[in-house]
Image 1 (cartoon, rainbow, N blue to C red):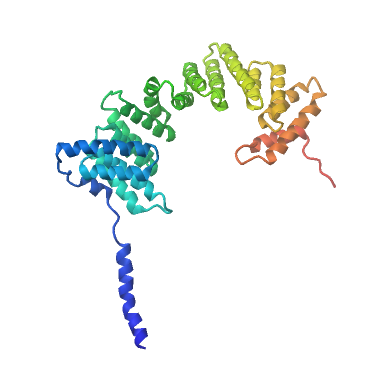
Image 2: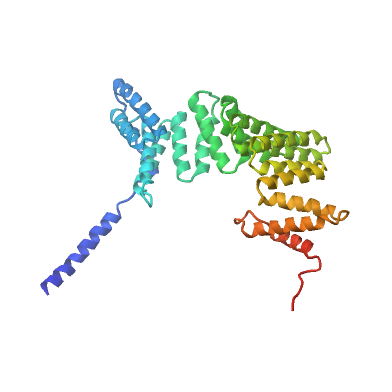
Length: 381
């Protein structure tokens, strides 16, 4: 009885202890940033801290987080006001927080407070601002990350390496957000300073193409893709993007009733070169067929689709487009109906095993079914 009573008496104390442990508040980043500025230190201590902060920044860039954190701690021990070291520390804490699942909220909030404190103490330092933006982007606040970078970028026109790195980060965050027009503000000057940055040129082309309102806009996208393709000759998607942009330029030119034949010819030449370079891929040959159809050359288009199917007999686009050509010609060449029917049935077989979002739409299936059985399915007893 005594043992039971003792256990019962102790239980509330144990529960209170657990609750006390769980109620220890996670740091408030805003409160951390609002703390009074660190007192000034002697110049020699500040000078000793700077190479340590630089080393911490370099180690962070190499993804050597533990070593970067140690260097940042050493720098802050000498000079608590070193904003770069503090920003590095904040990102290191975030990486440690994310090493566990779920993330350690205490460490993450502490890292948030450290980077916020750093950027408030050095708001004009592009390195500190970029590190703060990287923290925000990592935790999913891309808009806030971009806005943080743009606040500094909009205040001057510096072209030092740190500012260009911040410009690249802002471009990336707007691009990832799908905000093409905002991304273009950063991408246009970025490719001037980083002419050999294939990714920047590709993103510029993508944004120009998605926002293209005129043929000239789409041609500019093609030129950006072309530069990226020069830098990435082994990337088929980048090579194809040139021709795709030219096709879009031709479409826009046709709407304006301006000459577009030259653009289609240039697109065909681009796709033909890609098809020759990537001899086992069906897509470039398929794209050649699409352009040839736009040029009203159905015979050459059919040959291109056939070449695509020789490379990949399950290429759905080539199956459908080749079947469509044969179906239209069957009105005057009845023997082609059987070939068209066989191609449509192959397309339906491919569609039956296609991954979600990659197959035919419901309307497409209905049209194929109606063509295959114009009187409707045969009802069997």
